[in-house]
Length: 100
Image 1 (cartoon, one colour):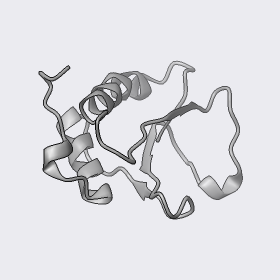
Image 2: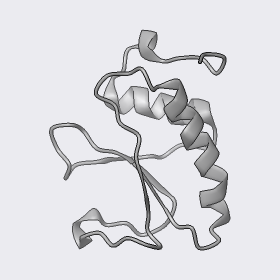
Image 3: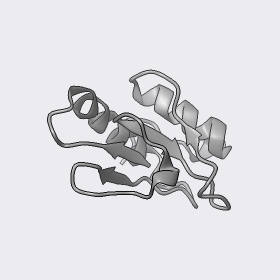
Image 4: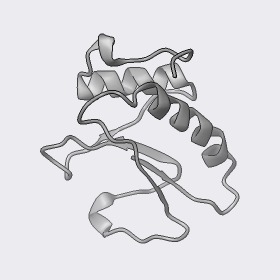
């Protein structure tokens, strides 16, 4: 899940197309959902502990209270590696940039 703000955040604007591309490449992966929340227009309960934007997190299917925080760089490949690492998506489910 991508938490971002539409209030002129240049890093949010830089991450957005990378996030969309990673979602496009992984669209066939079962039980994997890419979502986003614009924090300029939405409020979340305090237990989400969001201190900065953009924040990219993976929430396991069985535990919404124990997310994995994204801790890599700004590239589609790094986002996909993060998703693979925390969700244990098989390599065969990861599409290439030329698919679709």
